[in-house]
Image (tube, rainbow, N blue to C red; front, side, top):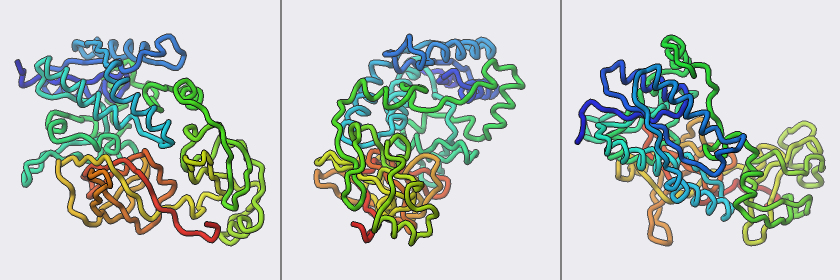
Length: 390
């Protein structure tokens, strides 16, 4: 039976979800906390903070005077998020599991569980907002009011059914205000550091983690002139735009590469100009690298995306919008065009007035109309700017 005033809050152990629960209680809701356990392969690991996080979440619930339930979604997570994560990396792409986790676990498994508890809505500590558009009758996903914390990018796959059942109280606040409220009401985690990285990896070295699940197949690292200048450990372990961990830091640019760098006015063009991953040639198991942050191979005026998801449930009209091709990126003006993919599925193409840096297959291209997040898709390919070395 549904309780019209009951809201189930995902308590993560962090300050944002704690303040979310407090704000809802202040607004007169009956609040129940749920701690979601989504990963259990490393319970005894120094990198897995799940046990500590639950203790923090329970302490918050105690201070706020609300119930908390510990729910294990690890099987769902492994089946619907982690398996896809491994598949994508094995295929040479760079997925964003946090986006899939939101769509499949936090706003599906968790939402279903909350509805079984008789909740009217769920709430999380995400920095985003939901608004009902009176003219269209549809729910809109909006950016959080704190531009430095906005998390709408990670939520862009939410649909109308999910948005209609969701509250994001801290999306109306700046992070400094959230911390102030937490201190004011004596929350034990008021000064807890924000979590970073992918939820199931924690703070551990990323390559060390991938090693356990993905096979290595070393191959050549080549520069634009075709010189082999090193060896990679396996294409899955690199992402476009990557600068660290290439093992080729001191190799000088030569000939055409040197001239191209110097023509763009890069000082010290040569051994001190950093290398960046620019292309991953899967069929030939070759990693292509370039020198200089603004090398043409790293800049894309267009991208194509599939696995499309629109918040409104319908495609936006082809027109001019803004887009992010990675989190924390400034919105980039673009033109949207619908695409029909070879397998018959829907896709879209974005054309940018300013070429975008290191557009990465597997990441999400997310579209905005002002403060409204329209949805997006998974980047399949991107065209590079032409260069004389191509």
